[in-house]
Image 1 (tube, helix red, strand yellow):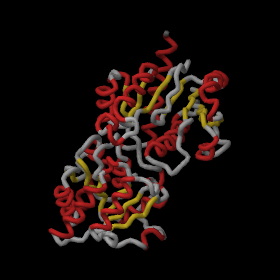
Image 2 (cartoon, helix red, strand yellow):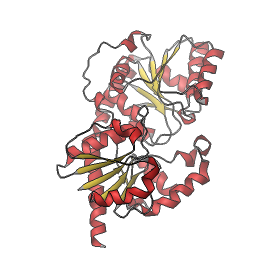
Image 3 (tube, helix red, strand yellow):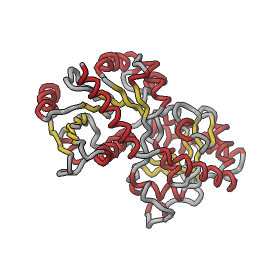
Image 4 (cartoon, one colour):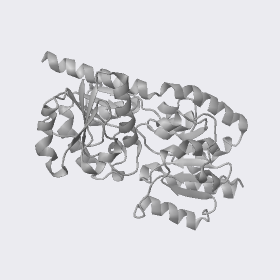
Amino acid sequence: MRIGVNLLTLSQDRYGGVEQYVKHLIEHLKKADEKVKLFLFLTKPSRDIFPDFQDRIKKVMLKESKIQTEVHSRIQENQIDVWFSPVHKSYIPNIQVPSVATIHDVLHTRYPQFVPGELHENNRYYEKFAPSFDAVLTVSEFSKKAISRHLHIPKDKITAIYPDAPEAFHHYRDRYSNNSIIEQLESGFSLYPASYNPHKNHLNLLKAIVILRDHYKKRIPLVLTGFAPKENQTYQSVLTFLDQHLLQDQVKILGYVPTEAMPDLYAHASFLVFPSLYEGFGIPLVEAMKSKCPIICSDRASIPEVTGDAALHFNPENPEDIANKMLKLLYPETRIALIIKGMVRSKIFSWDNCAKETLAVFQQVIKRNDKR
């Protein structure tokens, strides 16, 4: 099977959830079947995300100015069997081979004010391209239902396949490495790794920290990770809140932390607190389970589906509820019970399974196309 992977809009910046999904899935697609050959369609800015000269992986380089005019001929030249677009809104019209797209979530349908273009413009985009998809992949049953309902794509055309945590979390085995990041943190800290997007809901978490300090006389340190440009409004609102409520010594902002250093951070954390209003999946939840880090989290969107019973859930719009769940994590027996449940739950997430299930979808659309 010759798979063309559309990475023409892949970000070359610091990895987020989508970029991690792409990187790991590509590697495991190759491992899943020795007959698979992958053709990565890239532009120069993202060329170095993937190493050169990999077995059964070929880079197909296109100039950004010539994508629309050259992509079809390059698909034909390389005899592509299936065209796979795993990156949000990277779709190209009139692809002449079977086409599969990953839609990770439809955040714009629940919080249009948080997404550029808002509701109508984003819906028009999907209305334009969705009919050309032979199949759609997504990352949770929650997202499958939301995509079908809001984008009017038939459910039988959509397959939910769980991703997994990055490989760094699989090689981590009850050890604490020499990590200079850990040395600067207070013991007993809670952890929230997230981008500074409005739906990540940082301010309600910070309000819960204030409630714990002022009403319950409990000082729980909080560590925030995630890249944030200085002009990011959510990031600025976090800084303002910390200043107004004298939280600078209690809340540590680390910025971007390399993936390789994250397992150590989870292992040292007292717990993961995850107050997001909306997730198509929520990779940090799996990262925590695989690091034996107990979880308290939002009860919204896909989050309860991912955690199952391996977390305490709260209403993310209620800082008092967040604070109360954080208090429960101060009891050792609660933490131990959640860690054990998380270790069991984490076994259902696997890049090997993700790759095999993805290949099965590719094979189905190729067979259907052959019968036409």
